[in-house]
Each structure stands twice: as C-alpha cells, then as structure tokens.
Image 1 (cartoon, rainbow, N blue to C red):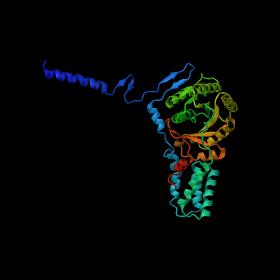
Image 2: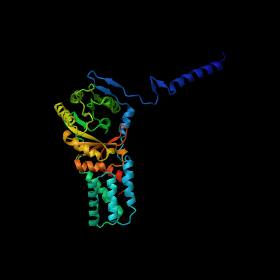
Image 3: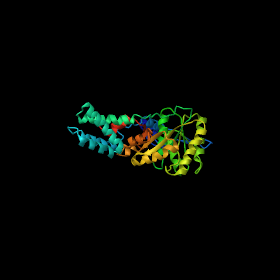
Image 4: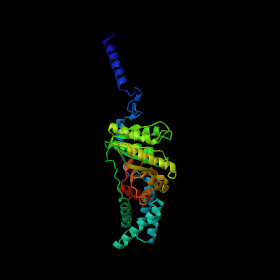
Amino acid sequence: MSIAVVVVVVILIFGAVGVYFLWPRRRDGLQLGVTKEPEVGMHASGTVVSSQTEDDKKVVEHRRGIDGSLPKSRSLLGAALARMRSRRALGEELWIELEEALILSDVGVEVSVELVEAVKDKVFREGITSTDAALGLLRAEMIKKLERQDRHLNIDVAPPAVILFVGVNGVGKTTSIGKLAALLSSQGKKVVVAAGDTFRAAAAEQLEMWAKRSGVEVVKGSSGADPASVVFDAISHATAVGADCVLADTAGRLQNRQNLMDELRKIRRVAEKASGTVSEVLLVLDATTGQNGLVQAQGFGEAAQVTGIVLTKLDGTAKGGVAFVVEEKLKIPIKFVGIGEGVEDMTFFDPVAFVNEITGDVS
C-alpha cells in the first residue's frame, strides 16, 4: 500500500471521528440544544422535589411588566381617548363620551362618573381649554384612585410566611401559585407549595407541573385528604427545611356555599396553629369575567379575611377597568396581575404602568 493511500485512510478515519463527536445528535435521550426536563425526586415524607434548569432560571429572570401586555384594554379605552383628542373644544358632548368610554371598559358607572366629575372640576377651576390637557388630567385622576392602596406583599414575618390562595374554580389559582413561586424564587426566597386542593383530581398534578417549572418543592396528600392537614404538613416541612414562604392552594368553591366557606375558615385556623405566620390571603379573580368577579370577591372577603387580589388573564380582556371597581368597592388591593401563560407572566400591580397601558398615548 502506498504512502498516499495510507495518508488518505488516516484522514478519513479522523474525519469520521470528528463528525461523530461534533454532529448534533441525541445523547442519553437528549437532543443537543434542547432543554432537558427538570428532574423530580421524592423525599421519604412524600414531598416532591423539583429542580430548575438554567434555561428556566433565565426565563424567570427576564420577567415581563405590564407595559405592552394589555393590547385589548388599550385598543378599547386607548382608542376611544385617541379619537377624543381630535376635538378642538371641551364641552358636555366630550364629557358624556368620556363617561361612556370608561363604562365600556368596565370601570363601572359610579367610578366613571367620579373620574369625569373630578376632571371637569379641575378644568373649570384652572381654566383649561385643551382636550389633551383634560385627558392628561383624567390619567392623573385614574392613577390617584389606584395609588391609595398598600400593595406590599407581607412576607417579612416569622418564617415561614404562609400565603393562602382562594377563589372559585377556573380563575387560575394553581397557575398563579406557580408563577408567584417562580417570582419569589427569582428574588432569592426559598418556597414550598402546598397542594391543598384535594378534591379536584388533577389539581395536585397540575401544581407539581408548576412546581417543576418554578424550581420549588410541593407537599401533597392523598386524594380526598383533609386539606387543612395538607397545609399544616407543608408548613411543618417548610419550617424543617428553612423555607421562607409557603404558598397554599385550596379547592375552588362558590362564595355562596356555606359549608365550603366554613372549610376555608378551618384551613386558616389550622394553618395559624402551625409554625410560621399566615401573612396573606390572596383572592384570585379572572379579569375576563368583568364585574362578575366583584360578586365573588364580596363573598370571600369576610370568610377568608382576604388581604389582596391576584387579577388573572388581564391580557385576555378589553375590560381591564374592572381593577377600579374591585378596589373602589372592596377596598382590597390588587397585588399581582397575570399577563400571559408563561411562568414569568406574573408581575406586581403597578398603578402608573397599568393606567399608562390602558389609556394609550394620553399624556
């Protein structure tokens, strides 16, 4: 065999080896460049342990705000206000049109009238003649109404801080727990979630999925177990592992079912007997239901001693104005809003950003 042939054979062999190691392929069931599923382990106690991939962490760190997240509300109220800017003079016709635009955005009749009357009063007292200036005053009044509430999440208590989530079925309680767990984890908090909804068959599995995505532990009981005992066990486990927060799911219930509301009171009583502190009770409301959510909130307020509201699916409705009605009627602050389907799509409620978003370019 000639030297040239030997050289060619050697080159081919090294080339094949290089292709084998460098060409994208599956290794141990994982396609290169594709994020591996987070591994899930199990403590002897039954606590599911979820780990977060680096890609998951990056998603949580790049959390969205309200800006640009409410196109439907912006297209309804913002578009109406934009049309009004073309008017050259202020007058009764404008005030009527302004009230109608606010009411159609689900701001509510009483709140809409109050906002417009406040703007009219300032316009007359200050001698304002510009439509742009009047609409700017409206924006300022809207922000003023929402800035009266304390939106601080109370977790600076004797650990673990216990946050109970309540609401009817289908509003996004379990999803909200997963998103808030991710948000708190991204801020360096150690979080445990409690699968306190033991009645809905898929509830615990859904919560496990969100725990996996958020990189937190979940404590669950058997199907049909006493939900109060599950929450108690979760708090005890959180204390043992040095967790900062426990986020507890509860079964969806109608606000007019007395036996279910009594059970909610029991969960709170039992949770308060455990180590740690029940620092928040968050009522989850679906923004797409508009003012129907107000009826739900009124029913839960007394029974559960609600301290804050999570307004979900805000990106999916043109009636984001319901935020004004909820706060005006209930005097309960909206603390978080859901603005998408991803684990990063929950943010603290910022009144200024919210008003800016739904009013569009009004200045």
